Amino acid sequence: MGHTSKFLKITAMFGFIFLYAPIVSLIIFSFNESKLVTVWGGFSTKWYGALFQDPQILQAAWVSLKIAFLSATIAVVIGTIGSFVLIRFKRFRTKSLLSMMITAPLVMPEVIIGLSLLLLFVAMQNLIGWPGGRGMLTIILAHSTFGAAYAAVVIQSRLVDMDLSIEEAAQDLGARPVRVFFDVTLPVIAPALVSGWLLAFTLSLDDLVIASFVSGPGASTLPMVIFSKVRLGVSPDVNALATIIIGLVSLGIIVAALQINRSKKQGADR
Amino acid sequence: MSAVSKLPGGRFLGRFLEKIGFGGRSLVIAVPVFWLLLFFLIPFLVVAKISLSEAAIARPPYLPLWEWEDGFLNITLNFGNYLFLLDDPLYMSAYIESVKIAAISTFITLLIGYPMAYLIARSSPDNRNILLMLVILPFWTSFLLRVYAWIGFLKGNGIINNLLLKTGIIDEPLIMLQTDFAVYVGIVYTYLPFMILPLFANLVKLDGSYLEASADLGARPITTFFTVTLPLSISGIIAGCMLVFIPAVGEFVIPALLGGPDTLMIGGVLWNEFFSNRDWPIASAVAIVMLVVLVIPIMLLRKAQAAEAEAH
Image (cartoon, rainbow over all chains, first blue to last red; front, side):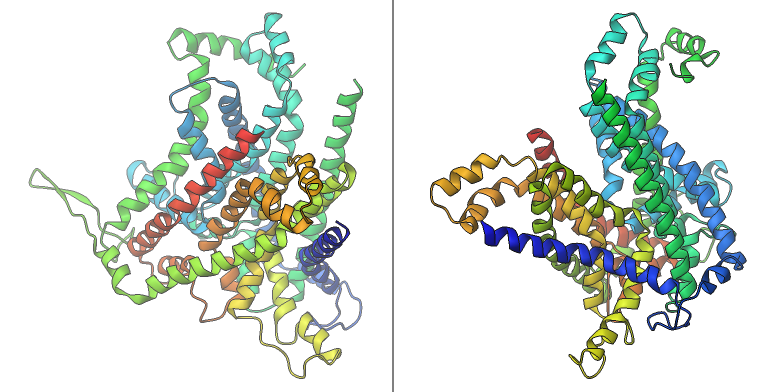
């Protein structure tokens, strides 16, 4: 057994190095004085300064944040209702259809989702004159849809694990189903809603392909701007931007994880 | 006490809807069903429809499928786009190439992911959470930027070449960026968490007593692995592999940033048909054929996921 576990540890170690080396190098070279991204020329924070003076990047970052915030919120609402219906409602006609539709966006290639949504928006525009051109609104609608799929995965697993007896107790005490949901179920699954929201938020912030399809002139998201910059080669200010994004995301995740851990421990103590 | 339930009018609205025969239950079900029908399922029908229409220089750039002419409904189904895909070898080779690249990268991802998932599943609960966190964390950080990071690693004067040149292992820089090799690295790298997580979820449920029984009966670890562990984790393996394979077939960003001019993947072909050639009907036909290619993998995934859910 000794050989096996040593082999496992070494492979796993290489696996983790493989996962993290690019991210670490990205961060290190964001503090590089030299314009050559991969040759060290001394410590400097000048690329961060350059970043905050680039109106195109700032504008795109603002657009992306707004889109991510709104679409994550819609995604959690739809994901929560969808999960609740699928897990708690015994049988209804559209159950298997709903279960298929809510998981399928997870594996569908992005180019297909992007193209199909764009064609839908164009067709709707011709038919009923809505959504009134392409831009932020169409990106939000698209991101909410695939964000809901991811949020639903997180929320469903929490609903499955949840102790049913508290919901039943509330019902026995005469609470109406809506009241049970808002007063009992929702607070219990709240940590899952938070992680679902964060997941949908970061996915929206990160999406290039779908946004490129459904966006219109004037609504360039951050990934779209990064992609057009990166296509021309590596540039140190993209490294600086990456470091900021990675830093913020890691911070958010760690805070959320600690929070969830603490509420779990409190739950266990009670 | 939640604040939402105290919203004024909430109870009144509920009673009103129940009275008009639209009970709360079906209304609640209708919200996600309607949303996903509109923004997920119907779009595919639109794609199918446009794949059958003719391209035109117009806004939108295709001709309508049906028209009223002298009181008759005139439907023109045009299979020309599909015939065109068959006719031009570019598309066929792009499909084959995409499936090949996706399959090979999936296999490599499995080879790297399995030992990692196994180790995580077998570690103590405390370590397990930390290791899982380490697997998930990169998944949360920008996918685009992680692919970008590999440009710095793989390019001519990049980190790997600099390291190898300095240590004297090679005399001249290796050409890695803008090759299929770089595309493999990119896919394996970005999809590794998708492989590890379902494998972990499966392996963590594996009953250790089976392994002990096998060892007690004199099987060597390697035999136990192939006769006990591997067969028991097969649905986890299928789920992980399909979660990597399906999106990899349609991958656009990785070949666009890391691949070379010879790298021909169908996601990029679709992208170019749409953005450069502005040929929406051909792009739609490409998408429909891609969906057909992916039907079996998607069914495999659903089956594996159902098996995993059963085992819970």
